[in-house]
Image 1 (tube, chains in turn purple, blue):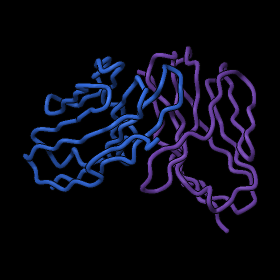
Image 2 (image 1 turned 90 degrees about the vertical axis):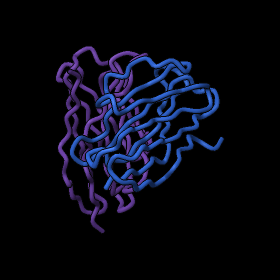
Image 3 (image 1 turned 90 degrees about the horizontal axis):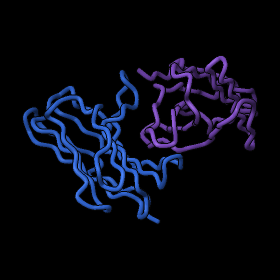
Image 4 (image 1 turned 120 degrees about the vertical axis):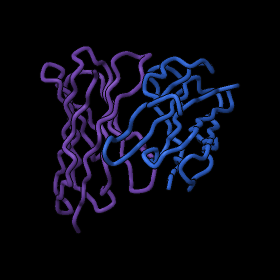
Length: 111
Length: 113
């Protein structure tokens, strides 16, 4: 069974700090990896996707992928109170298979 | 584009009643997914369609749940009879192609008393 594991948190960081969110997955042949952000009472929204080993940067966000270790992470630099949300890691084995989501890590950025 | 539209946004019903949740996908999106989210189990895939055809319904919890997609513009998720453990937020999400971005509706919050 395909599994995606995340620490539930809450992860609390002070404003301006780097928040580091981690995710591991069980299916070694997984090909596509995504980070979704979900504010309380809202629906998930895509913030990052990554497909190959290494780092991918987009503004204050950096996604990191290590397929050998089956590990994906999301770094948020200069964290803001508006970043407070639940971050969902999602994994896709192939292009035609649905996303499998982790349960999410709740991030709280303290002003 | 109006995005994925779900109705109702909130539903409170009593155990044993039938519940029908509705979804209008983004025009041109070939894939439609129904997810259920709870605190305990997170976001679980119930069923998904490709070009209106059900592809995988292995996530549907039991026979009380059924889903249909009669055309490219409409899908329903039905629970009959409903039970308190069905209380959750049900999301419909659509995708234009296999590896494209998944767009979520605002969800239907179901409470079964």
